[in-house]
Image (cartoon, rainbow, N blue to C red):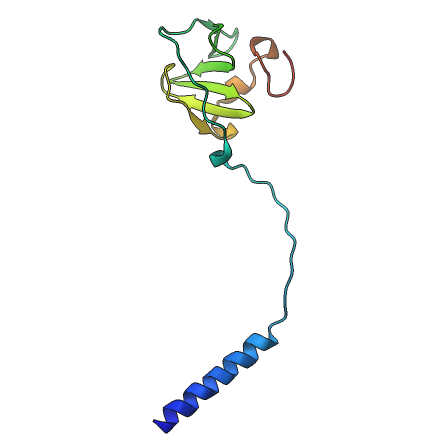
Length: 126
């Protein structure tokens, strides 16, 4: 029992010395983080029938041409994409529900739609 007490005391003293000898380190880091958890709620879609679509010439993208939408909305492939308040949202149907997605999830064909087909182009325009 005396050996166990001495061993325990020795290990405790060693831990105290090691902790006390560790220098304090202060670092400043910079980074950019996109957190989709901070995205505002997706746009509310209350439309009783499928919106009017116009195909963008020379592309595979359809633009919603409907006054019921206060945001930009596109269809590409099987998905519907909405651009609202600086965030992208995606849905399988025009009815929703829309979920926030990262910009890299948006087809490049949509990103290359000319600004004249947008209500609020993310890089300026109408």
